[in-house]
Length: 170
Image (cartoon, rainbow, N blue to C red; front, side, top):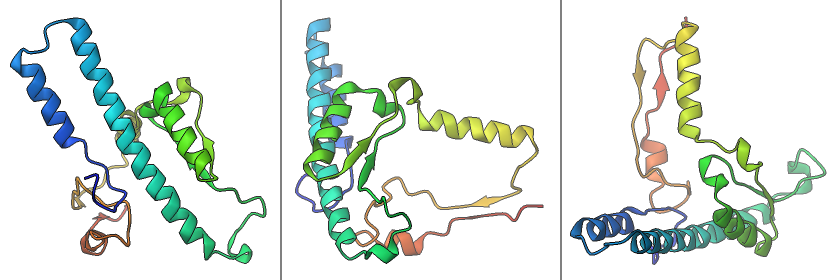
């Protein structure tokens, strides 16, 4: 994906390569396994850094066309917000802080103890809705595992083809 001029992420090839390596038995010690894990993290963070850099440059270009009357607050500041479970990783915090600063963006990252898995939060919200009887009778939505981040990018048709809706509330 490195050669693609998009902001999309994919770790499937790297993940498959590492899984294959681990299953071959060539990694024999805990130190070797730690080296493989560190190498994966370095590779993944480099990929994230490149994509976020591209996204911030794209956002900066888009923001050039925004006039001050379009901005609700006079204290508008370009910001990159990093949250969720991945925001607990200090190395990733550093990489994203660097790329945000290089692009003139302020970085906002909650304290690590407030960074938890978004999937768990979504599941918990579902439990609370269920307990309160807030259940949709039917949900008709399309699942897009590779939903594009750029609505104007080469895969933008997904935005227009999606049919996401839920049953009306009673």
